[in-house]
Image 1 (cartoon, helix red, strand yellow):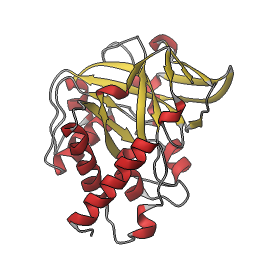
Image 2 (cartoon, rainbow, N blue to C red):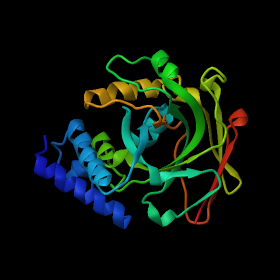
Image 3 (tube, rainbow, N blue to C red):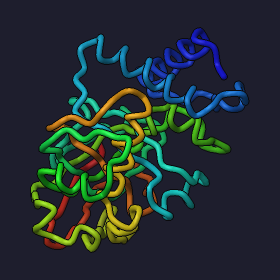
Length: 261
């Protein structure tokens, strides 16, 4: 395991990479002894520094919840990160690509909680009861650690590679739509790049919300009413560059567009 000093040093290194939109060598290449708990500790120090600087936490992202994403990354267990208020965009937004590193985009559903959700024994049924509504979302990945050879420890330390999200306009309660069958057809500059359905996320996208409630309980935390939970991608990530226009069709859940500038 890492020492508190090593954890603080790595958290500051990642904060500097975030400020400068740069990439650092893999943590596990330099510290092969680092554990998953070390990585959440690094993320926690980084989170608390941002909160102290005035940023406001609005929710959490869950990652690596689908076979598509696990195959794309070579990592086989979910993870989570935090989301701040200045990372949330509406459909139609212009996104400065230079604000991110290793920029990719994913197709997801987001859930807004009406009630707090606490582990350690949270179930899918508990999660559905606590959710106010679902909304389509695109996640912008922002990886400050070199991608080749990275492990779950590297990804978690880097706030689970979260950069920003773009939310759609259509909201549905869990009893209004079969969330498992919400589709996503992702196009870049008019060409379809990825397709999938939300059941690709752990069989039901809200299963990830239950997983998250149980996981953050291990870290002495809970999910609060009003939080946005980004449930994980049901397509592989698509690389984006300056000038790209992204469009995603979620059928009855509407569409999302954004443009990278």
